[in-house]
Length: 344
Image 1 (cartoon, rainbow, N blue to C red):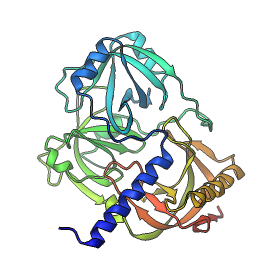
Image 2: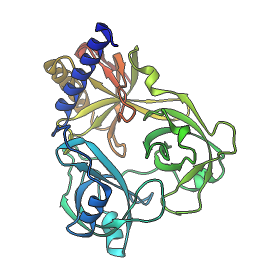
Image 3: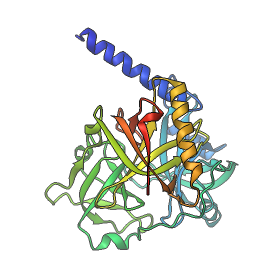
């Protein structure tokens, strides 16, 4: 039985989430039931399946498609895409994050722990053009798989936990790398943005994109070195270059964050928000936008974001991590005064 304080806390938490979701995202409905995979494959084989590009990297040969349930923004699945012919391969190389596409094909029967789509045809529905274009193509720093061959142990950041822990997706340097876990219990309880140490083997297949496996014979194949959820509810401050996630088909307005790097170069982005007052949140965004616009020479392409190296910010507030799949930790700010411009 719950006490009144627990009920109030739970209710307040749900109000906070509802406010957050309705404020940030274009559509919101939580009533649709998930579509069976068999129905999705029927659409793939017949009229095609509509969705969005979650990620596209020609250097990594990594392309991921997002299908969202009609009427339910938060019910979505990600499917890696495998080109079925040269025409599709060429088209994939031109895709960008947030492009809306129609794909035809079938689910690949490769017994992988995550369902892949074998793509026979792909059409562009809406090409996404960022309102704040990146200054240049993103130059990947990671060289895969070569960077991994000489390592049996790596330090990385959790990007996603897939299929009840059968697959872990990590960010190693600036590359997205799928990890075959082998023992799903080892990935239980992981949060996105957790910092981890992994004992690994590089897999021979597929050759691209690079996959790795946990070395289950090693002691502690997964060790969390900094658990993201442990930050939740704590007061603190972060400092670093200002980051911009531009307005997109899914997000109503520019989202600002601070990038924080640790001693090993692992990066986290802390988004800067206020969920108590829409007017205060607007004032915070206006202040951050002015900072951003004041120095345009230091703007870099950050792959799925923009980074302004000439604008360093300090933000003080309460850290907020409410869901294992939350894209980024948040700093809950009381107002514009919670932000300070730091001289370079």
